[in-house]
Structures are given as structure tokens and as C-alpha cells.
Length: 367
Figure 1 (spheres, rainbow, N blue to C red):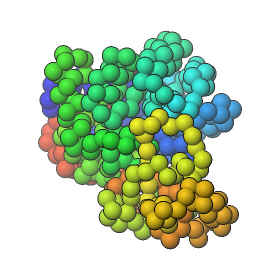
Figure 2 (figure 1 turned 30 degrees about the horizontal axis):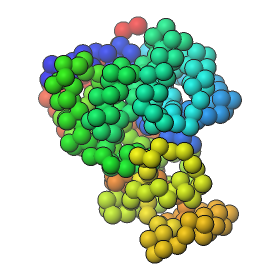
Figure 3 (figure 1 turned 90 degrees about the horizontal axis):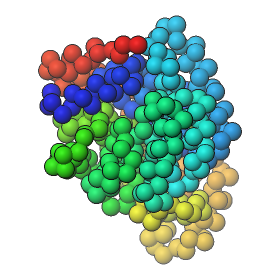
Figure 4 (figure 1 turned 90 degrees about the vertical axis):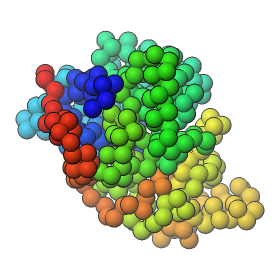
């Protein structure tokens, strides 16, 4: 193993003593990341995330449910709770969240990690990181997501992240409109950190990873861990409509059947995303009509009409919004989150089959 990776892996094992290698993380997808999904990912040896949102009472409810789910699992998996923190993370898209929601949740529920993303101003990350650390005695792990080398260098200085999440353009949902895939972005960020003489935090690869092959590739690129979002939308525990999941299973050729656009936000009349962001979703009738010249007003009207019709309006012929990454064609069926983690980890370990990675698969943290 490259020497630079060893401190990163030691940090992760100490901060998250229940994890198994290769490490799988479920993305903090608003609405889709349910307490059951986050819990079962962590129970399988990954790190599950909830999405924070801006509703403090709803987040409090979800975290209370999550705590109950883990309490039931503790007798069989004592390492889940031995760190004294709830063995999941919470993600916040900072432009649309109030910092007090994150601070209160961190102080009361003691999540293991806080994932920061998409601030109005990049410098806002410094305050967010400082505040969540201050109410956790610096025991919460602060993760920050970036999508360019320049952004990564700024974040390292401003927020001193414990984990740097590097999202490539293949990712589904929101991300930078202009970015590279992780195949070039992650190594370039890693090299830039070395060139600056900066301390290198664990690097999280995000975007297009769907199975053990993607995990193995991410590890070879220098990632410490891999995150999957689209793959976990096809988990039974995901909080999305069945029509959306059916389209994920049916989709093929994700580089063609998905596209990046701001249309999804305009259809939902969501205002406020920083200008450099858009979203990747399955292309449908709404995208086709926009390309043909339809106005936003008419497209929104038709979208709202179809919202009333249920599952029949999903798919390329319909107008429902189905976020998905370019790897969507690799989804074969809907299954349990725990099985996703186990199968992907096992496949990845089989590919990266040298002794170092076999040894890592048996690492366990000490309480």
C-alpha cells in the first residue's frame, strides 16, 4: 500500500471502529436516505448517512429513530456504539440549511460525521466546521465535498476537513456543472496536496461507482473509501417512489440516458442553488420539450399535472424527476442495503486481492 494511505486508513478505523474494508459509504441523499438505510449500511460495515435538510424537528425525529434501530443491534455488534457516537453521519447542503440545525443535531445526537456541501460562499465552510467541532469536543469527523482541484485546495485551508469527498461529474443528483470524472480528478487532487506539502486527509471517491469494480478502481486511484448514491437508490430501504426505482432498474447506457441540467430544480421551483451547480437525472419528456423550445411556465404546469397521476408518469415518456448517475445501467434489481454493502465489498476485495487488502478486510477498531 502507498505510504500516504496508511495514516488515512488508521484515522478512519479509529474514528469509525465498526467499519470493514473496502469501505462503502451511502450518500446523504435528501428524502432517499432513510434511518433504515443509513443504519443498515453501517451495520454491514459501511458508513450510512442521513440528509440534514432544514427542518430541525424532522431531523430530530429521524435521528431518534436511528438511535433506536442501533440500540436493538448493539448486543450483536458492540463495536457499533463503542466510540460513544451514533454510528452514522449527517450531510448538509449548506446553501439551504441553517447552521443551528447542524449544531443542535451534532450536540444532541452525537453523529460520527458531518458532511458539508454546496455553500453559498466557499468561506462559509470554515464557520460550519468550527461550530460543529466546538459542540462535539472535536470528536465529530468533518467531511467536505468538492468537485475541482481549486475547490479542494481552498477547502483544505479553510475548513481543515477530516475527510475530503471528491465528487466527479458521473454522479447523480446535484453537483458542479463543470467537473471531471474521478478517474482524473481524484489523482490530480491527491497530487496537488502532495505538491503543496499539505497534510492529506482520507479521500472519498464519489461519482459512477456501482459495484466492486468501481471500488477497486477508486482504491487504485488513491481513494481511502468509496461512496455510492445511485446504487443505494435501488435499496429496499430507500425513501423514493417505486416508479423511480423501476426506472433505475430499466435504465441502460447511463451516459446517454442521463443528463446534467438545472431543469429539475426549475420544475420543482427550487431557487437558491449556487450558480455553478446543476443536477444529473434520467432524461424524460420534460427535457425533450425544453430542448424543443417549451417555456418553463408550461413545463412546470405539465409537471404538476403529472404529479397527481402516480407511478404511470415515470420514465422517458413521463415528466417525473429521477436523479441518477451515469452508472445507472449497472443496476439489475432492488435489494437490501446490507446486501449491497456486502456484495460490493466482497467483489472489490476479490479484485484487489493482494495481501495488504486481505489484511485490511479483517481490521477492526479498538474501543
